[in-house]
Image 1 (cartoon, helix red, strand yellow):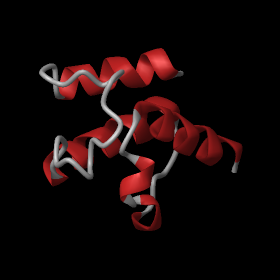
Image 2 (image 1 turned 90 degrees about the horizontal axis):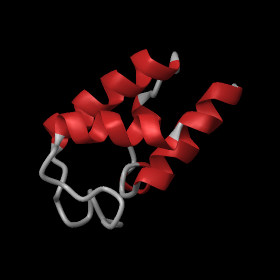
Image 3 (image 1 turned 120 degrees about the vertical axis):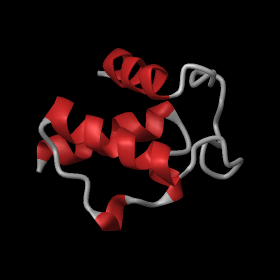
Image 4 (image 1 turned 45 degrees about the vertical axis):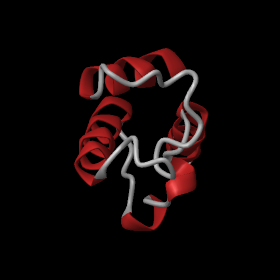
Length: 76
């Protein structure tokens, strides 16, 4: 799953080193348009529904946080 999420992220923002960044939102590396694109791709790829309540910076600051979010939503 992590590899697929990395692939999605690199398609959206090929200029970002997602493996080494740990403050993607806090450091404003990703903007709101990036997040909208990421959420859409994650919803479609993993058949989950990321709601507005999950759109918190800590869910998108790192690849691992995104993996955790998708895993949590997959179990629901």
